[in-house]
Amino acid sequence: MQRNVGRIDVFSDPAHIARALADLFSNCAQTALGDRGAFYVALAGGSTPRAAYELLAAQPLVDAISWSDVFVYFGDERCVFPDDPRSNYRMAQDAFLSTVPIPPKNVHRMPGELPPKDGAGQYAQAIRADLGDMPQFDLVMLGIGKDGHTASLFPGTDPTTDDAALVRATYSEETGTDRLSITPRVINNARTVVICAEGIEKAPAVAAAREGDYDPTKTPVQIVSPINGELIWLLDRLAAGMLKHK
Image (cartoon, rainbow, N blue to C red; front, side):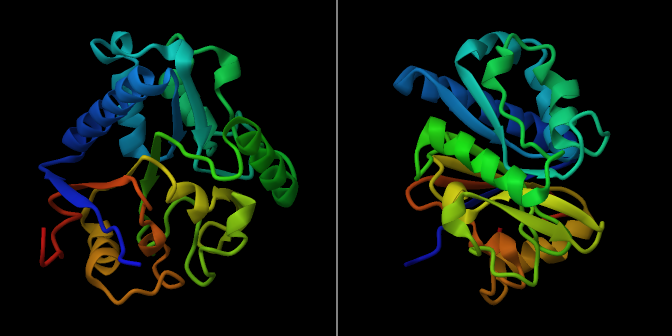
């Protein structure tokens, strides 16, 4: 099967990426709400998503979305308590979930405080209960690490490991932390997947992901290839700087 490598949008700086990401979130939400009456999104951590979340909490975007029909999940999480400063949930809560009019029951955080395998199993059950064995998110938000990882799928292990489980426990050698991550089965069934990257330190990983030999065990982000959905890369000029074809 041919890979869906998606399209690239290149921006002058991270602030413009954040604006594009916030607009994409809003547009996907409005399309999903209009077509199906609900919007299911898996959030990412990181500085660019945080800036986008803050824009979503402000005018004019905050009033453009029917937040009571938005259902929030997470693509990955560190195995920490939800009030830990390292928690993706806490970041999203601080940036916008605590201020936009979304019902708390619509926000489904990953239980990072549990033993990793227990947390992964519990979160997979929650996804299945809401979206079935082949969950289809309207939007999955991702980043890319300097090592080519995405979500919490790290080099050295086939990213499709435990794919049917929907959520798996992983480990970051770089930070020495246990993680939880959705699997490619979830990512690649989404209607839209967006990958954001900024800064010159991400340029080698972006180039390897887009133009290097296909080896997702070495560069896990290469596994991102939506089956029937759209893949969008939002990059600044520095992150795109090593690409031969933009």
